[in-house]
Image (cartoon, rainbow, N blue to C red; front, top):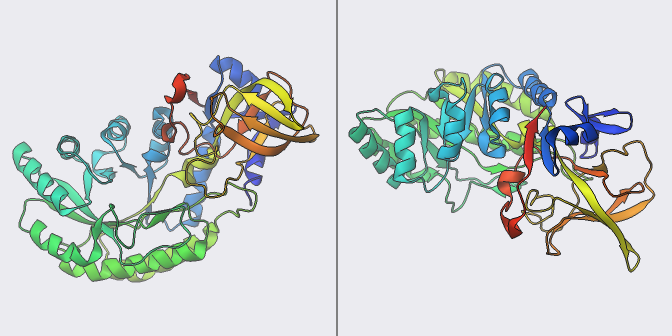
Length: 408
């Protein structure tokens, strides 16, 4: 499957794209305004079912809330996944409002403040330590609160993962504790009143190459096997990271989940069972769970020709969809899948630049996109919009209102 195949996952009713079984024009009327994000409940459920089918039963699925922290989405996923990972106390509050138990919520990320760490320790969630300073702070907070903190060490591995959209492990990093000094930190933690559970190793995100992910998982198990010798107790928590990518562009091929699942089966049935029989094994995913389950819908405000080029101008833009505009990690700008949502059965008649409402040439949602005849009030739909959309965009830029989010 490629990025364009994602469109086929959504229903088309009377020539109109449907999300959650509701045609896009009716959905716009229900929301009351454009632009908006719409997330399909059925597709979310299907994605978790696919992961359960392909991955070993012993693997716990953790949803990384930073990918999409909409409370309704998180609530829906709380009945489908095993745990949550948060990157802020705002996300922590959302997680703790769900039925997921606090001891199945982890808090990762650099530069956690004393106030944030205090909230996490008080809540009883697992703090993933990113530095020796963080460790000292958590020890002091536990003593102050009379609470025994639950901690794991986030390890910056001594290997890098190629092919990731964002590399977050290997070499010098703000993320995690360098693997070579982890034994030293564990020795210090053994003298404190902490519940040291295990390790989290996460090397990079948005990887579409299964063979690279498999190699990273094997190296992670080898690294943790070495580090386990310095643990004061048997490992009870082992987060193997995630990094599963989704196809955003025409030439992107979907991740071979069969290969990843087979590799994990070998690791679980072999070295993990032999060396870490008490460990709760975690694969942490965000984008892979929600990314393809959402769309961004924006209305055409104006159409014009300028020196031989057609421009379709919409009421949304990069302030809601920074990544789709090409200004969030793309070296060479490429288009996300895009369609005219109320004209799904009409053939393309030409190419157009789909631009937003912001007063900057950076506000480009589609560059020379093949479209049917477009008219004012048509609905432009951007796909792959379920992850890192509104909350990863400069929503206050130029003072335009935020987008609405709905789960259907």
